[in-house]
Amino acid sequence: MSRPDVVERAAPFDFAPLLPAGLPPPAVKWKGAPKYNFTGGNNDADQVPLDGLVAAAEAVLRREGRTLATYGLTSGPQGYRPLRQFLAAKLARDAGIACTFEDVLIVSGSLQALDLVNAVLLARGDTVIIEQETYQGALTRLARLGAHTIGIPLDRDGMRMDVLAAELAALERRNVRPKYIYTIPTVQNPTATIMPEHRRVELLKLARQYGVPIFEDDCYADLVWDGARPPALYAMSGGDGVIHIGSFSKSIAPALRVGFIVGRWDILSRIIACKTDAGSGALEQMVLAEFCAPHFHAHVPKLRRGLRAKLETLMAALDEQFGTAAEFDDPKGGIFLWVKLPDAVDTLKLYPAALAAGVAINPGPEWSTNAAHGRSRMRLCFASPSHEEIRHGIAALAEICRAEFGVPARIANVEARAGR
Ligand SMILES: Cc1ncc(COP(=O)(O)O)c(C=O)c1O
Image (cartoon, rainbow, N blue to C red; front, top):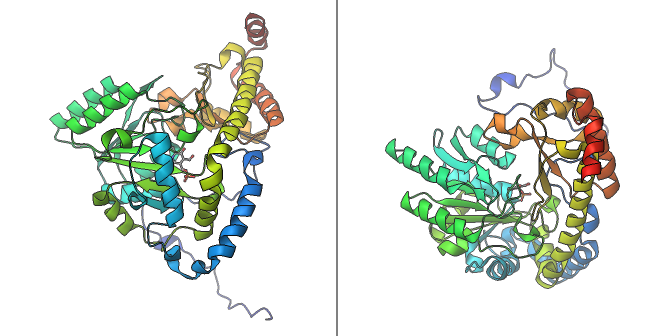
């Protein structure tokens, strides 16, 4: 068809007066990935199990491709049944969760799970308890919904129960019943802590005592280096008062956009009623189910070994370039390192300076309810850059940090290296 004539008008149409109040600021146009990208939850490109996914796609499409003609693939509104069956078996084996495929809802990434749980439970002004350092995607959603968030500080075992107990008691005195306690108990984002079983028991007891449900986000649970994880809170509660979410983003690939919710029918039925998108991407679900049933448990240990090797490279690069100026715990799993820099460093200011030089970091305040605590901290994702990019990127970051804040001082590096 030839190009139609454009119907001219004096000035371009202005959408601005039509936009409702409370929208987020406009998106910034994407200008390509930075040279050294330590941001986001991206995974290792070399670890995507391509051959297996190609074979799975071919096999499942040839066998069942015609079901694509039906919304929901003849599996109904909860998602592709073989994928839900795989998940029920996997969650029983790995997380101790006793559920059937009927307790599982497939969603478009666990971000959609956050949206759905919030849609079902939250109204403007509601109170929610979260970990003080937590997933930025959870924080921005809660802010946009006008929720009042209470951040509970973490120690090396995750959310602190003494502070949680005090907060719950204080809220009860004010007749406030929080809508949920959101936790990432197994390889926390960003601190990478793993809540031990005894603390999980305490958390469940407190949640019960105050009548507050737990919202358990377990998306990194497959990435514990030695594969040994504590049972899920959902498992330890028998599913009573716990909503459990997970994802294939960290174990297979984030661009697939496949996550899941596990819940008892009383709450799952309310969540399904809010999922009005006529089903999550069907092809991804089919390919995942076909691939995962035979290959998931061989793939994940390989992925973990590769991630651990990149973490070693990152920790060595930080030691070399920052010396004692960069403090961190050696994480037990995951894809992030949570780094404390000297108090002189403001990572919100380091961020633009580093980006201008091609190094992207996540500044700490964006991952915390306590901006002062996050001020000199940053989150580094080590899964996606190559070993070489990690080394060069951290060297570049140290140069920028030194130019902006005077740390690390060269002399400190030399001393640190000699002393380590
Ligand atoms: C704690 C946590 N929850 C949820 C998500 C969302 O993941 P996805 O929507 O890719 O499943 C992420 C992504 O990084 C995360 O870190």
